[in-house]
Structures are given as C-alpha cells and as structure tokens.
View (cartoon, rainbow, N blue to C red):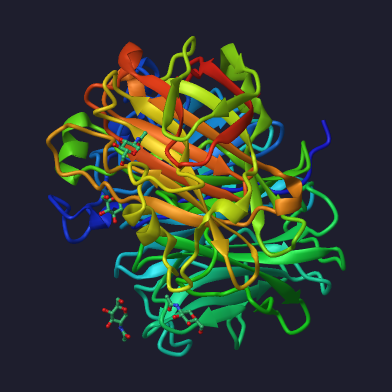
Length: 579
Ligand SMILES: *[C@@H]1O[C@H](CO)[C@@H](O)[C@H](O)[C@H]1NC(C)=O
Ligand SMILES: *[C@@H]1O[C@H](CO)[C@@H](O)[C@H](O)[C@H]1NC(C)=O
Ligand SMILES: *[C@@H]1O[C@H](CO)[C@@H](O)[C@H](O)[C@H]1NC(C)=O
Ligand SMILES: *[C@@H]1O[C@H](CO)[C@@H](O)[C@H](O)[C@H]1NC(C)=O
Ligand SMILES: *[C@@H]1O[C@H](CO)[C@@H](O)[C@H](O)[C@H]1NC(C)=O
C-alpha cells in the first residue's frame, strides 16, 4: 500500500486542571513505567457504547497513519484527574473499533522528566512519521522535543525513541519566550522554499500568539521574528491547528498544500475560557503570515467548531480517503471528586469530516461515514405534520444509544417572532427561550434521553425568528441540559446555543443527533449537527431515570405554528469494540 502524509497526534494538556477539587497544584511525575506497562488494559469492561474512551482515567487528543489510524491522547495512568501525563496510544482500522497499546511516549529524559504534553506528528518524505511534543524539563520549562518510531516496519508504531538532539526548541531570555507559555506544536507543513514550518501556542501578557519556527531538516529549528498570527486579549493559545481547506471540493487537503483553490484555517483553544475558536483566511507563505478574512473574527466572539463541550481538538489529513478529520475531547460536566469515584473522565467526540462551506465563511462537519457501521434496527417516519404543542414518541430504537436524523421543511418566517437585534448572545437566548417557552415558529426538534413522564429530557431544538432589517430568517439552535438530570450532584448544566446559517433557498432544516449512554449508566453524550453540519453542539448529560431501556426519544414542536417533518430516521447503535 502506498501511503504518504500525515501521522497526526494531538495531545492537548492542561484540560482538567480547572477541575479544581483535589488536583495538585503541580502535576506529579510518574517515574516507574514498568508497573504501568503491565496494567492489563485488555480486560477492562467497556464504558462508552461507541465513543472512544481510554481504559481508565481521563483522556484527550487524537490520531492517524498508514492504513491504520493512530490515536494518541493525554493520559494520566495514576488518576482520573490531570497529572503524570504520558502519551497513551491506540489504533484502529475503521475509526470505530480500537485496540489499546502501551504508552508511546512517557517521561524518561531530562527534557521531559516532568511530563510529556501535547504535540503533533508529521510524515516526512519516505513515509517517516515524526512526533513533535512539549516536554516539561527538569527546570519545569516547556520545551519542544521529537520522537521517532523505533521500527518503521511495525505498522502499529508501538515504540518511539527520543534522539539525543532533544530538546529542539527552548524558551530563553534571548528569544523572550515565557517558559510556562510555550506548548502544543502543530503538524509541520512545507513551504515553497522546501523548509518545514510549525507553530506553537504562546502568549505575551494577554496577547495570544502562534509562534512560528522553520527548519530544513526537522532537527534545527529557527524561530521566526514574527508569529504566524496573534490576537490581543485572548490569553494563552493552546492546541493551535493550521491547515488548508479546498474552496472547490469537500475533499481534504494535505497540510502542506498551498493553492489558489485553498483557504487556510487557524484554530486556537483558549486556555482562559476553555473554548475553541477558528478563523478562515489567507496564508502568505513568503512572509509566513496568516490573515483572517474580512468578517472572520479572531477572538472569543468568533466561530466555534462546537458550541458545547469540545476542547483540545486537532485535525489530520487522512491520505487514504482524502479527507480531513477532526477529533475533539469531550470533558465531563461533573466534579473532579466524582470523576475520581467513577475512575475515569473525558471521552473523544466521534471523529468528524470537516470541509469549507460553499459560502466560504465557515466550516461544515459531519460524523465519519464509518460510524454508520454501528447502526442496527432503524425506524423511519414518513412525512408528518407536527402540530404546535405536540410531542411524538419514536418507538423501536434503543433511545439511550442511537443515531437520529430528522429533516424539517423550513417553515415560513413571516409568522415568526421578530428578532431583537440586541440578542447577540445565542447561549443566553437559548436559556431564556428554552424548550418549555412556547414560541410561534419553534421551539421544535428532538427530546433525547427523556424519562417516561418527561421529568428528565434533553431538548435539542431550533427556534426561528424574523429579522426585520434583512427581511429574512434568524435561526437559533439550542441544546438544553437544564432538565437533563434529576441526580443530586453538582453538575454543569449550561444551556448551549448558536446561530445557524442555513440558506433559505434550500428549504430544509436538518438535525442529526448521536446519543451514547455510557455503559447504560447515568452518563451520556449527546452530539448534535444542525443544518447538515453547519452548527454543532456536544453536551454531557447525567440522567437518573432516562437510562438504558427506560430512555425515550421524541420529536416535538412547542411553537404555535405547525411544522412538517420531511423525514425522520433513527437507528439503535451497536457497541464498538475497544480492547
Ligand atoms: C519490526 O517490526 C516488524 C513488524 O512488526 C517485526 O517483524 C520485526 O521483528 C521488528 N523488528 C525489530 C528489530 O523489532
Ligand atoms: C510567565 O507566565 C506565567 C504564567 O502565565 C506567569 O505567571 C509569569 O509571570 C510569566 N513570566 C514572565 C517573565 O512574564
Ligand atoms: C472581538 O473583537 C471584536 C471587534 O474587535 C469586538 O467587538 C468584540 O468585543 C471582541 N470579543 C471579545 C470576546 O473579545
Ligand atoms: C471541564 O468541565 C468542568 C465542569 O463543567 C469545567 O469546570 C472545566 O472548565 C472544563 N474544562 C475544559 C477544558 O473544558
Ligand atoms: C411546551 O410548553 C409548555 C408551556 O410552556 C410546557 O409546559 C411544556 O413542557 C413544553 N413542552 C416541551 C416539550 O418542552
């Protein structure tokens, strides 16, 4: 098999520090890997039905390579909270079923003795993968190191070696880089001059920056005078990601592609708010500058991959199938104490294919096609009118582990409520106008993980407004966790929301929701894709009643206007294998 390109890895660190409770101020060092390597990961019971989850403890960060997808993730072998970070490793041939391996990279040298944090991989010419990662050295500085596969004939790339040239990039007084704000190198790309480039997350005071480095040989790196991009008042940039997207096709592009029919995307994870933002813009390879397009806002008011729980994400180019795939980390909504009790925390979102929307103003995401392999037993509803105030139960699927696709006829906006231009915060709007507040056109959508009497329910819905200025629609998409759980625990029940930019000429409004109840117990993931993937919202919910066989699925309309369902299909989902 002829395979080129990117092996990609991301491991964004830091994530669970803010769990607060019980987390040590500075992470511990895990010195004895012998015992870790003999941990029998193979016999762990499954916890998530089909979302990737590590054998124990919390995870984050993604994957790929060579006909075999590689997922590396930040993993604490000792605890369910952040600390002792190693690069755990798992592989898959289909992005659905996974095999766990021993950690790929773990603290062993002066340049990473205090932790092996996030990084990325690049495939060098001759199909040679290399990982660049942030090590925490003996002086607790963040430095950048590389690791190379020990045996290129091993398709599982199980063993990695750290060459003696490490560390390759260090913060110094001369280069003015703060040793505690220098992390998460990206996949490298090759410029027209043949030199490799990559960016590293950084900040100077409150200005977030993507520091650029260049190299001819991947060993000697020279810092560029200017960052690739920076933005005031955004704080530390973690897990930056920089990649091209095609303006003429949904197919993905290799990270080094620079072409007139490509735009570039820069994504950053803001440490301060634990939210991710991206812009679409132009990359100028000679000046090594990235300039967001006019209107593409590069701060905490900009576009997000996902308006729910989704952090430390990374994309990679899947050269086998010519697509770019996005992985994100879904945090818990519970406290660190609870995470410790259950012995793990965090799940990976279903990998998503990602491409540029026709408008060129935003990205579109869709679960990888492989996930359909898990569909069993579908039910299909014919075109149906949903009167205002109705709730219709969808029977015949395992509502706690399901994939639901519903399409509505785009209702007439003339009858919609008038949009108030002061409503600039969609999240706030969703919590004010939640599913139980009747409107005229909407709220309508799905009630997932609902209990028999609807005491528990997670509403994923739309609301349509009339914008008097543009004489057109304003569409709001919400995921409401406020009534998701009756368990008496300190849970984060934020209602998520975002505006959705659907072309009215299209005449349809779609919603796909993936529900995965974790081992039929009280922890679930609800991943929703509105408008064929234009707006995505992922949430964690912790139902007490609506679990296993007792969970129900409904479609509802709580507006006064009727809504027509063009089609509705729902499938029970099998479990994926992870061993
Ligand atoms: C390298 O990996 C291949 C394939 O797994 C294996 O057959 C070979 O023995 C390995 N070589 C070494 C030196 O471990
Ligand atoms: C470096 O960053 C840390 C963490 O943000 C901060 O506490 C420290 O003051 C910074 N040091 C300098 C010299 O700017
Ligand atoms: C982002 O920038 C815009 C324009 O400069 C500004 O209006 C907005 O308040 C900023 N948002 C944040 C969260 O800083
Ligand atoms: C994870 O979730 C907890 C609880 O909701 C929250 O306090 C924390 O900020 C989150 N961290 C990230 C990285 O999303
Ligand atoms: C619809 O609105 C009514 C009145 O506010 C409320 O009692 C009911 O719970 C709502 N239905 C749903 C499915 O939210």
